[in-house]
Amino acid sequence: MERIMSQEERIRKAEETYYRRCQNRNIYYYPNYKENTKYNEKNEKNKKIKTIVKMIIQIIICLIIYATVYIMQNSEEELPKTIINKAREFISEDIKIQDIQNNIGVIENTIYSFFNLSNDNIVDNTYENTTLQNEEINSGQENLISNTETQEANLNQSVDESLAIGGAEENETIQNESQEDLDIEYVKTNYSIIWPLEGIITSGYGLRTPTEIVTANHKGIDIGGDIGTEIKAAMSGTVTLVSTEGDYGNHIQIENEDIITLYAHCSLLCVEEGQKITQGEKIAEVGETGRATGPHLHFEIRRDGRTMNPEKVLS
Image (cartoon, rainbow, N blue to C red; front, side):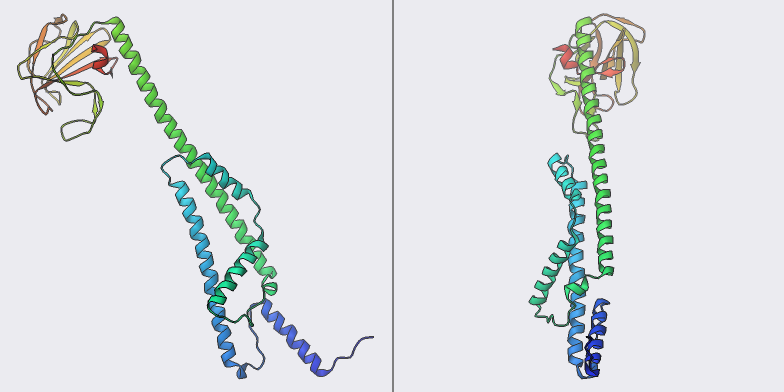
């Protein structure tokens, strides 16, 4: 049998229903508003602080995510596979919305306790978990997953590109070294080459610290000597170039089939183009013409346009 409600009970029931609906819509309703001005001001303050707290939490989470991605993408060294695998495992895990809400709720309650705020008129977690908020959280989760997948793809692409570039550079270096070794072995097997000048090597073959005069990649060796010291032909052949121009200054080029020897920075040239030269014959004198830091002989050995370390051939 249905109980008949009194007028007062109906009014109270209607107020409770209206109050609950206002809470679900984040609208604060208080009976006897004019008589509770201080009460309303206090809850208005709580509402503002609650908004600030949520913003701070979101900013901190974003900063952590961005910092992690930035470090992973801008690392100069190759990332360990363990880190990449852990990141993939984290991304592949399901994110539980309820757990996130509970953790955020714990943080908010801690902050409210720190500021000594009253929770009497703060909307209960049961009423806050409305359909609209769940949709926003789901949307945020989808965006987070999408962004994370994009970042993972970019990270994998960066790692693959770094590996590809590094591998290409390493392969090119190995190939160059292998070709130089082949050229050196070929020259030592098929030709006889002697030292064109007796002296101390002042600058070796290959990379070195560049200056305004010295180049970064040294294509030969520098043998120190006094100006006017005799320079001999390191191998027999035909003089294909006699020049006084360029960074080499006074220089000579002698060719024997596919091998070329070059002598630069000379003070005096004693041969002419087209002249046949025998090994050990005087061809020039030491000088410091062209781009030189002092008197010396710059000596090169080339095969098909490729240079090699003369010390490995002469020794």
